[in-house]
Image (cartoon, rainbow, N blue to C red):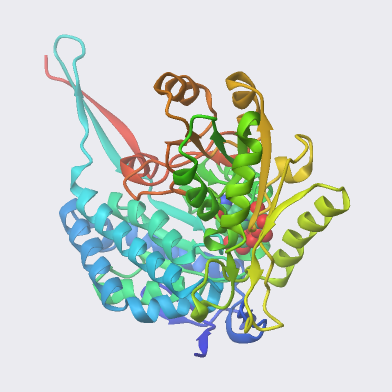
Length: 482
Ligand code: NAD
């Protein structure tokens, strides 16, 4: 497959980047280049934002009713499903993820548009009792033009997660996908146009973060920003937004813990814990990357985990194993650097998976590994690795488990494995996270479920009805009728 998306999709049409620059893209499974994308600059972002502004301020998009928007989103969901095989093939090639994972991502993408299509005309205002002789309505309005900067780990899903609620509310959108995986976003922009979205409602501009991304976040025509990626860039985005007095949602990753108590059903927990770190090769913001285990069951738990983890296999998308490659050579080296440092520091290895025979030598593969017991202050116990690297840390009692759970700067997702109902509730109230799973884990699961973090994991909420609130603002109307 040759993907040549060297143009941007702006105002309902493919157009060349103003200065004609391109960036080669690489297949993670082989390390080979396989296409080109646009290296957009500030002038391209300007065209896209202006197109979105026109669509919102004066165009057909700004006049759509909520019901019409709902129908459009639903029609787009259907079109995504009709083109699922093509989209999934693009996604697997571009990101290296196993084919069945790419298939699931495309199904989730369609579900985002289906869910928010159904929700579009169910976002209501309110009437507030006020002084005698007055009537007060609070109505919800779109921000106007929303900017979206995407990461490379779930490009297609993220397209749905961030655009569907924004469009449902009535914003016009400009998306800057990650330069390391943006093919599906470009194809989707074209498909959205086929589904009937009017010109300028969805604009996609490819390019690097420090040029195209920074131009988008600092553009005066953008009213709200949605960013998913690293904490370092999240801070840059927030500062750029502050310069022109707009707000943003930041989804910046995590170091999410499982808390495994002695009374837990370990046979149920272990396979879920393995999947929570190997899914998408650990390149998941809500990956369960720390397992905190009650010391009295450490040996028993480690033996079960070792046996399950040793079966983890890594390979190319078409091999459809547990893990694919890491997205780029640079990220592979970053993940491997964490692993090498832990080994050099003498941190014990509990178990390792295998890179399958037949995986190309030039692919960006990493051997999945579980370290434990890991010293509490070691980098792999505290920092987001963003790879298939699991750390096991023992705790003494409930208070110690809570301390350890909240001991990183992140706060995105957590899981508690215990049969003790009182403990479930006590911990649920005190663990710092935006989602908490009890005797289960769903890395960022559920389009219906509000999702987002605290601290270094970011702020704002995506998914569910919460996203409709973040992508809109209230206006209070006060009538004096005497
Ligand atoms: P990144 O934050 O650099 O990139 C994410 C997006 O931000 C991309 O679209 C990129 O082009 C854009 N960007 C980069 N610099 C920018 C700037 N100055 N202004 C505006 N936009 C900019 O992430 P990365 O370098 O691709 O990955 C590094 C680390 O980030 C990973 O190891 C992981 O820890 C984290 N990460 C987290 C998520 C997540 O889902 N939370 C996703 C991807 C990466």
